[in-house]
Each structure stands twice: as structure tokens, then as C-alpha cells.
Image (cartoon, rainbow, N blue to C red; front, side):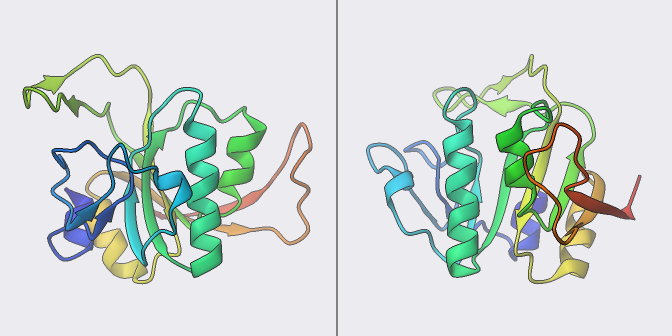
Length: 171
């Protein structure tokens, strides 16, 4: 996993996982702990629930990264670009990796691979502290980009240039 490699072999904290800790993070929250009401640690990973709660989880991730300058890596669907709320979240992203191919998930109860994911996925990264290490770890996964916000860009227009994209590595 590129995420484990970036953090020296183990994810420091998974803010949103199952009780059996499938990511094998050093620390984690799983139900009944509600990560949306917690103060998040300095470094964290999140693969939040998809669906109606995705917006809430992504907004919480941005708020935590902004408030504490914490370093976060988020695995999420890239299939919602048209949503204004996702464009607002992307305003805070400093790096992104567009995953080549489809992500297969693991069924926690059996450990079996679950196929049939019809969405493109990406890693959205907040406050990455070591860009060269991040690139070395993630370029094997897909197209990696550094995003720089454009000063004064409106956040609620029908057509916006909210980020200036610069490709770090395309494979």
C-alpha cells in the first residue's frame, strides 16, 4: 500500500474503519465511536462511507486539517466532480493521485476481495509534509498532481477554475 509506505510501514491512525481494523493502522476509530465528533490526530487516513454521508465526512476532514494542520490522506470516489460541495472540499486539497484502474475492496467478514466498484477513485491529500516521499510512494498508483489555489477564485460559480493544476508525475 502506498499509504503505509508513505508513513514508514504503518498507517498512524484510521479515523473511519471497521472494528477488525482492516488497514492495520496503529490507532483507529470504529463504531460505536463517532469520528465526526472527535478531535483528529496529527496524521490520519480516511476511507469514509460513500453515499449521503460522504459530504459530511469530507467536510470534517478538511476542517480537521485546517484547524490543526494535520496531515491526512483520503481515499474517495472521483465520480462527483459536478457537486459544489466536492469542489469546495477540493479547494483545500494540496495533492491528489488519480488511481489507475478500479479499486477492489475487502469484505471484512471473510477477507474476500469485493469486485464491481464502478467508480473511479482518487487519493485527496491535505497538508502533505514530504512531497518527494509522497510522490515516490504514490506515482506507482496513478497520476499524481500538486494543486495550488488561485487567489480570490469564487467558490460558487457554475464554471470555476478553483485550482491551478500542475502535473508532478503522469504515468
